[in-house]
Image (cartoon, rainbow, N blue to C red; front, side, top):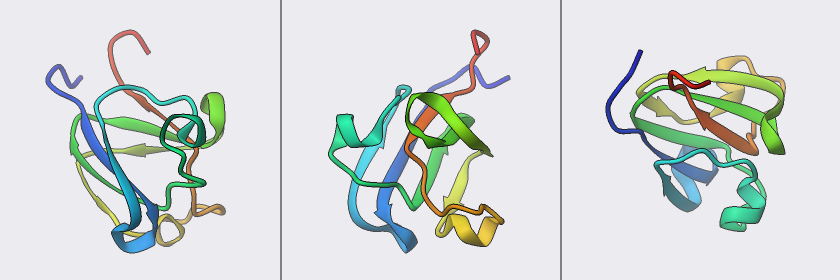
Length: 92
């Protein structure tokens, strides 16, 4: 279990394009919080995360560990965007 800092940078478009935001906390709705229509790529710098296709942590989810994720479709996701993200902590 990861016990340190959580940090991830999300991008509106694939290949780290469009607007971006650095996250350190859970986000239940990317559109409401960051005014981004979608998240199509990310760079997980610290911690482990779950990313969900729909707001409010619903729909299909994907486990993300530290690394660069340029295109979610290349990872076998039927949808190439995520709308909410949650840190994996002891309380999940």
